[in-house]
Amino acid sequence: MDEVLLRSLTPSVLGILVRRGADFAAAEDAVQDALVEAVRVWPADPPRDPKGWLVTVAWRRFLDAARADTARRRREDLVDEKPAPGPAPAVDDTLQLYFLCAHPSLTPSSAVALTLRAVGGLTTRQIAQAYLVPEATMAQRISRAKRTVTGVRFDQPGDVATVLRVLYLVFNEGYSGDVDLAAEAIRLTRQLAAAIDHPEVAGLLALMLLHHARRAARTAPDGSLIPLAEQDRRRWDTTSIAEGVAILQAALARDQLGEFQAQAAIAALHADAPTAEETDWVQIVEWYDELTRLIDSPVVRLNRAVAVGQADGPRAGLAALAALDDSLPRHAAVAAYLHERDGNLATAARLYAEAAQKAPNLAERDHLTRQAARLNTRRCH
Image 1 (cartoon, rainbow, N blue to C red):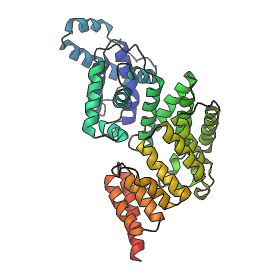
Image 2: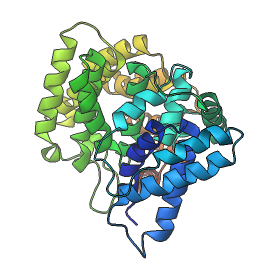
Image 3: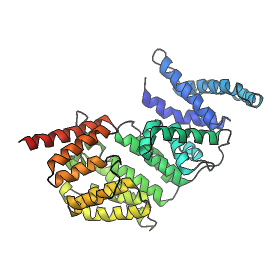
Image 4: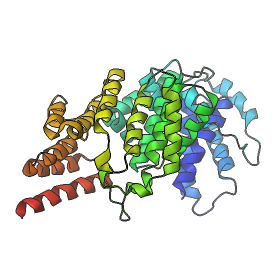
């Protein structure tokens, strides 16, 4: 079963159902049912037209549910609009669907969560991790968002800021390696940048390109993570770096600084350094200060502590870290790194082991476990 194919077809199929009159919540349920059926049927009997197959099955599931609804008579009128047999139209509705999901009736956080779940293909657990909230809390938020838009006509697109937030989170989840969505997020952001002259859209595209340029160097052949300082910079995609820097410079020249431009500036400084030792950490700290003024996020402050530790020494980094809640994801990993640089190997090894237990994915857990083992070996000798 080609999971990537199913994920790529989901937004378009969902968009077709919505355009044909299905309310969003019912359409999403129907598409999910069709995906489950595809997983069951396709291995033995793959369709010649996967998208058309999904549209037909999802539409039938929607109609079945509609007939059982209290608005049965009104919904049964939609039977005449059943998609005609044959290949489905080759129209990419994904970006439009992102805007429609960012509906004015939803709060920005609810719109982002709903879009990530319904269109982005992320699980409730992944979305909860991105928002630093319990999975049960995020499940309730998504359920409330579905109830809010049930019966609502999706003819009022949401704002650009909400769509940018969704694209950013989809890219981050794809870049982490759990689900390969990074390339899709870049593709959609390119579409958005071509359609809208907005410095933050350009900033987000630049940020994605600069991060994605390092992807080939992030893992070893055995799948283990390679920290930024240890990566082979010859494997970085210099074409993507040059494009990202050019896009960023044009956006910054407009003097309308936003969070994505600031993050892209930090990524550009990393990309510009010939070696890890030549990284301009002082300027990176200055950009983190700008970013903190724009969005006072604990994750930003955590990353800033790492930069301070590089620019001003590990004890300065630990002092910055002390102001943050130690339950913050990756807090223990950052503390371990700074303690190791300060020469406190026993504390660093303990914190690496603690961080490994809290790691959000297997690759990160294995990396942190190896770091703890490495320090324990050094201590023994």
